[in-house]
Picture 1 (cartoon, rainbow, N blue to C red):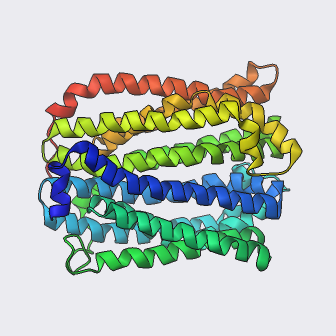
Picture 2 (cartoon, rainbow, N blue to C red):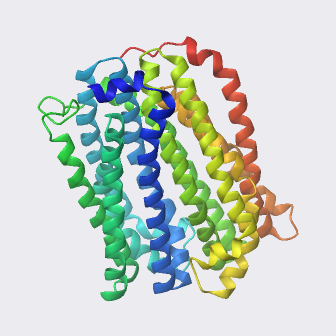
Length: 452
């Protein structure tokens, strides 16, 4: 109880450091795993396998989207209930998270396995990359239940006052994955199937670690009888709050599908592989922003529930400053050292040469992304689902999809239009976030949280 009460009393900058640093370490570790995974696949299975991984990623993101629908929404709700001192409902949120994740993950697995090849073809797979993408995603889908439980419980750990325990769970998953990858890919010659199997096994190990905390009878938030029945009020609020990151992930998947297909039409499989390399570079820094957001979320949610609005806003301002500083690094790397960054992932000279210019184009707007991500997370953290959903969709649906389809028509080289659609949409979405924030600032401290 003392651990959660500090969210409303300790200095905000110390709290943000305490909660965000473990999340950043965890998310950075996840990012490094994805980079290492790509390096193993790129060097061990070839450029086409790396392109197949890029094609499979939006499918994986859709699976993750259903996990975030439950996990992020429930963890925000948990923080609000803890701020309101409603510990009974807080515990029931934990039980509902498990049940909802079991149901949704099973549905996603069944649907994904039935229509796997048509989905991958729609996502941009070609005849050359389909086999690799199928082998990878088949294993991932069989382990989808573990993935959902892993992400859901990690979100709950942070809101329950255990950011370091959550961090360790992620590091355990990443560490096991990095150890198993070369064994399965190279020693056992399993290729991309080995990479996927390593991912599933590592998440299963992490779930066992997470369960030890929620089975501890000394914990305020833990498993016990009476929390497993789905509660309409809790599930409704959790799903409403989680709808913002869910729609963001779904929209992101739709964007990747459209961009993959545009790249395939105007540049072929190597253009898709280039996009995958750039995504993996920017991904590690975007994950750091997500770590900052995860650190901010329980602080903002708790203080909003406790009506301490000045502390809520201070956590937001500090997170914006840190997020912009992080994205300045990827801006410098992408603009000044694109060739060196690409060589980390591949030794294919044609792919390296083809990636340098688009990396500079995409990284030109990196300084704006942190603010936009943190602003959307603020509204998610305090349960203002409508504004959070709107901000989640502006970059992906309102701007990026139309631009990705329209800009190639205006360029002599249509492929350039696809690349430029990304920084232009980033700029427009950041401007939109400023407008929404300024228009909502008074309501942030005027509207009390809705009673459960």
